[in-house]
Amino acid sequence: MPAESPARGPSGAASGSVAGVKALNCPNCGAALTIRAFQHTLSVVCAQCLSVLDAKDPNLQILQQFEGRQRVAALIPLGSRGKWRNDPYEVIGFQVRTITDAGAQYSWHEYLLFNPYKGFRYLTVYDGHWNDVKPVSAVPEPASSRGKSAVNLLGRTYVHFQTASAETTFVMGEFPWRVKVGELVACTDYIAPPYILSSETVETETTWSLGEYVDGARIWEAFQLPGRPPRPAGVFANQPSPYAGKLKQLWFLCGILLLLLANLALLFSGFARKEQVFDHQYTFSPGVRDASFVTPSFDLAGRTSDVELSIRTNLRSNWAYFNFALINEATGQAYDFGREVSNYPGEGSPNDDVLIPSVPPGRYYLRVEPEMSSGSSAARNSRMTYELILRRDVPSLAFYWICALLIVAPPVFVTFRAVGFEKSRWQEGGDIAAEPDSESGEDG
Amino acid sequence: MGRLLYLAYGLALLGLTGAAEYRGWSLLSVNEVKNVPRTVRDNPGAYRSFYHGSSRYVGGK
Image (cartoon, helix red, strand yellow):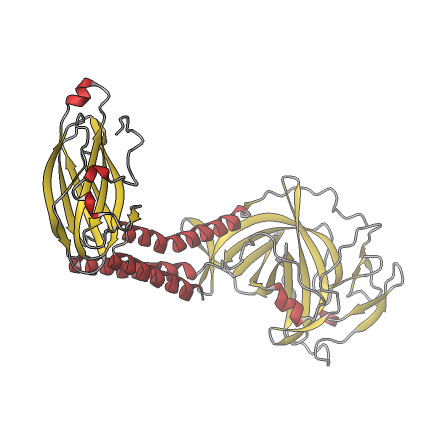
């Protein structure tokens, strides 16, 4: 988000690793000034009185003067030197740019870095989100991406993110252009995370710059700054999504796991005995005093596995309750459970199926105790015919469904997080109309 | 890391499902009673089922 593209090039301005220093005095307050970028510097700001001076004028003509202007503290002090992207750079300028939207001001800071052999670059920060920005000389071509306005630069498509009018609200240090507090530029940002391509237009001149999202800790390390960088707040325009790339891999793995699950289901279904061990029809009248009975014995063969009990009744607009006990003849171990069958118009079913879990092999019989409503004479005279069918080792679909849901849950969760991240990103996007800022105009 | 974790989680789920299917686990809640007397076969009415009665049961024994 820099303003005019500064003149760049490997001019032999200094013999040091970063830049030499030229000492001058402010014509306004007499404070000492330092100029590090020599002939590249067009404006220099007095650190004492914040006057903007013409660096090309032998008498350092005052271009802009301020009284009682509030200072903004730079996180990276001017003059800081560090190795950035394998090259030594020095921080020579600092400015604050502000967008005003619906009465609210959004400001970001820009640090101007200089290396006499590599030229200028910027470090920008907004709410703890840092970008390493370099001016680009190529002009992007208009394009579109999924119905959105975009531009194309060197084979990469950048989607339009925001258009706004930004005002320079604070300057400090030296600049390779005529810096001016209160200057308005029309900014347009296009994103292809982690990159951001920005255009800035002043009158008829448009300059482009390319930024890359960087971790603040890297800057702190490079410039050996004390403490830690401020924690990023919210989601920035070109902040790379932590879910990018992971989502596809997760869904791919999810597909493989579901395929394995389907194979597992087919395998168990193929090898399941599904052996019918008992089938008998009975009748029941509610008027009977003791309706409990036991079935003939039957064998449950194979390993410990489930037993499916199917109840088929002729119930209509009525209900029945069954107390069951599957009892092992030899050990006396019983599996007690109850089932209700109710069938009313539009509700319920005359039939029921249930799986009795983990029944060891052996000889068993079933104790059955049916119950029905016997409150009215009509109910007492009703008669239910029902059939009990027992099958050994029947595959249960329930666990496969539960497993499938648990397999799908993490990718779904991550997808929601990823969508939420992108939503947060684009909440900040859009077009912001220029608004006059009464507080940050020039007063000199 | 996340992928490996998810893969391990998924494989553990598959293993658990396989074990559930092999051992014949079920979502049905049953009450296991040990040492039911052999007389139940001769006198089924004497057995008191854990699940005796339902919420809609209006009679009595």
